[in-house]
Amino acid sequence: MSTSTISQNQSLARPNIYQFRLGSALITNLLEGHVARQDLHPFVATNATADEVQALADQYQLPYPELEHSFTTTLIEIGGKLIAIDPGFGENSPMPSAGYFNHSLAAAGYRAEDVDIVLISHSHPDHIGNLMTGGEPTFINAEVVYGRTEFDYWQRGEHIAEFRKPTLALFQKVALPLAERMRFIEPDDTVLPGVTAINAFGHSAGHLAFHIESDGQQLMMLNDTVAHYVASFARPDWAFSMDDNADAAAVSRRRILNTVSQDNIPVIGFHLPFPSIGFVESAASEFIFRPASYQFNV
Ligand SMILES: [Zn+2]
Image 1 (tube, rainbow, N blue to C red):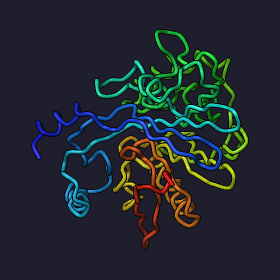
Image 2 (cartoon, helix red, strand yellow):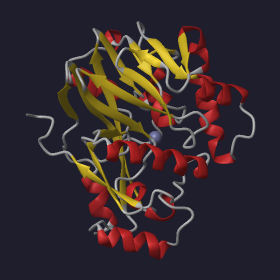
Image 3 (tube, rainbow, N blue to C red):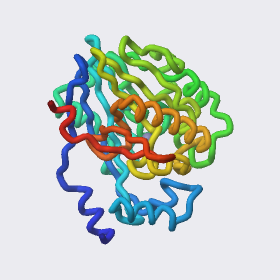
Image 4 (tube, helix red, strand yellow):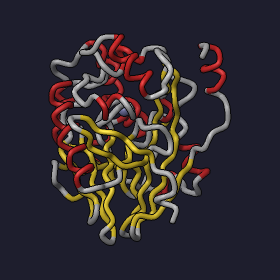
């Protein structure tokens, strides 16, 4: 597959809204954007060789070294509230093929002012950029719920890796000014009934997953616990280049993937291929992501 073919494909029409019920909750995945990259290695594994990454890509019929990295944001209507989880880059997208949350939101029949809670998993740009638009809060009626550990880490701003300096600057621009309207949570805290924060520290200092439950139906919002639908599952100990603490991220990844595979809890991942929902199977020391087909339509 040539480079030009891949970049042309970036502008073709594709599904960008997927909606389903989980118990009495209504879940909507929105494609906020996607980007073509040419660096499967080392992007998904800074601690593996290019040959090892290419062999895994071959096994799964994936091109090498090209990949698509996509961004899926999730809306949850639960208990009479509308939650927006990690509403994307917004106007702070560094790439023309991302930053479309607000567009997809309207296409799904919602308005920014309808959002009651903005729930943030962590402070990386694709997750917080859209908190502000033109210097004003994008979601004017929303309470912003943020992990205490995560917020404190970036507010202190110490020992930030060089490649994360722009992330710190963005945090100071779009998150810090909203501190007064924030509610801070810790792992195991309830965001609202049916939505619980889960410790997924490692990808960033205080990265959170979210467990959703409605009428006995469960769902795990993995957020960035996984980065790639093959590599993060088949090789959970590979260090994703965007993990701020790769060792801690691998521990969280294994713990949470063990839970969802053992309990057969469906998962949504921010960087999984749209519509970004499926199931996790455990196989020896590895995991396999099984994308959903019609399970949530019937
Ligand atoms: Zn991300």
